[in-house]
Image (cartoon, rainbow, N blue to C red):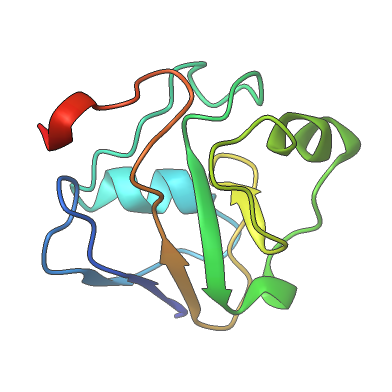
Length: 113
């Protein structure tokens, strides 16, 4: 079973997390199933960027991004070459390390609250 390693995030996962992830299940669903409440404003329909994550390790083991996902990612806050929408990126058989960006386009948190 692959592990999904989540780097520390100030609000969602202050200490980071190591999750036994289900292969073939999206990063978003794996996070939600383990109590990490990543935003998903469009209900995981690939219509927003609130579930954007940056894949720090294991990018090549994830399912391939669709053209729709690539177009949406262009609008994501803090876009990096290994950015993915976590609702679209399905886990493969290898471990993946993700970082959840501090901000999303839908809800920029003011003053660090």
